[in-house]
Image (cartoon, rainbow, N blue to C red; front, top):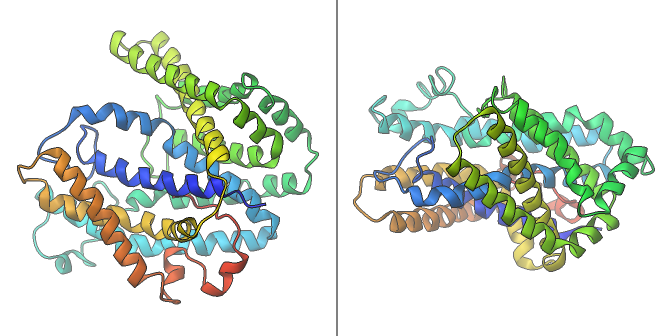
Length: 383
């Protein structure tokens, strides 16, 4: 049975992705373009989203994979991942990402001239950040592709052996609101022992913390959805407990950073608060989604299909808007509003009139042909 709550969560998490990327334009963290005035007040809300947004996306991707393998052989699944992930990635690298790099080079004084002077002669010289060739925000696609194929033999075995001991052990953990937090133990190990030595790059090569961490969430998603009713029953019953736990863990994490200087002891304590906070908020999202969002509508059907092209296109449109308004002496709130509305609006125009209605363009942005939509299963791409 299709879980519409996962579709709603996918759509809403993507909405947060646009807001998050707009926010990156204003906070002091590294990003492709920056406003002429940095707003430190946004840092806390951005940090809150940063803790669980991407892990939740990978976890829901793992859940979608469970459904996808129910109607496909391993070979069919691999072929679909190839066309629905690597084809849009290639199109994105060739056509969508170069304008982002172009605006960044103009802003930094590293290039002058029109876009036609930049693409294609300069757009693919060298590897970003020293060069211009990059996949920027589309890094999610190769990571998801690798996770899907790397785990495919294990996932196929588990899909066809629902009585496997692993499921029974996971089910015993998810039956209790306390034991379910034992699943944070691997996450704590990655956070404590990998993250300090392998900072996030999204470059795939050498990005070991992200690879191991997000692979774990992807696998967790597959396991969680596999045990079905008992997992969701626990979430619904204890949803307030997970919410309160998330609030407390986030406050403790922020307070720890404000009160104590970094040290080995503080690092391990912070890692503990971080993974508990992250897991609690993911459980909270799933729980409240299961209670209030497990129903379909025409809005959901439309948005669920649009989410992939929106993901591919939005950052290019957002950075183009940001480039032309960054030096204006407007309030950051007005700029934030303009970038948000402009990004949603222009991306929708491109999607509705340039992608959705054209049979030969749809696969380039990860969409199925219209003839296939009646047999669609929950997609494993969630950005």
